[in-house]
Length: 305
Image 1 (cartoon, rainbow, N blue to C red):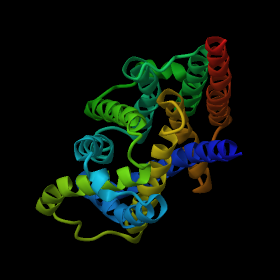
Image 2 (image 1 turned 180 degrees about the vertical axis):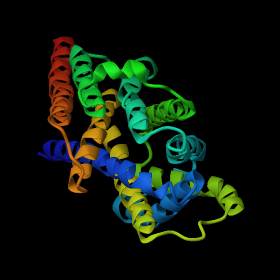
Image 3 (image 1 turned 90 degrees about the vertical axis):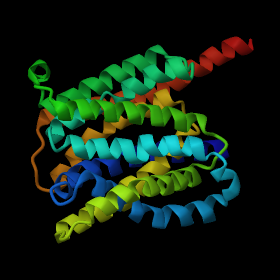
């Protein structure tokens, strides 16, 4: 009974995390016009730690002294996921378009699967591959409005290369989170954020805080500090404890789908091709989650016999 409940929560978390990150893309496009990438990264995590620390303390009740013993690993994860990915994402948006950034970001699940196969020796099943192909096809359909052939004509620039580096950092971060089973996930995220803020503080003080921010900018950075920074990161790290990193990664394909839904709610139009692409993404996620599990159980039963 507990396992079923736990599994349902994990699947819910794996859907909420991309939803929150999708909002980060939509609102981040406006905030980056009023703040530097360093300022955005520092302020969003300064807001986040106000919730992360109490959540970890009262929900997980960790022995903080034991958590801090892993400061080297947590510092590495902070540099990768807390600082590196977010800073590079916002920096990339100064040189490339959000569409290009989203397109490059869509290769993250593939990198996680490949890196997990080599680094964690996780088994790559045929359903993993089928789910990945379907989801990637759906993402490309959404991003190109059905003109997948246009991908060959995309002009890659410095922003695209920065985004590639950001995706690589995120993939390694996800795999490291899978290996870090001795530390409660919320506590690990909270300590990583504190380390990240300490690292960012000197640079932020040198740059200074933004002199004036619009109401739209304040709402945007507040959202980024609460939902993508707290909700998504906590849900993502919790999920990594129960599902292979290669299977969790495919849920990142939901980001462009949720981005399209949020855009629709904000008054923008969505085409039939984009809806079809979204359906492909959901089918790919379903196949990866259900079929891969069945195949894995069959393989386990063979070994048990």
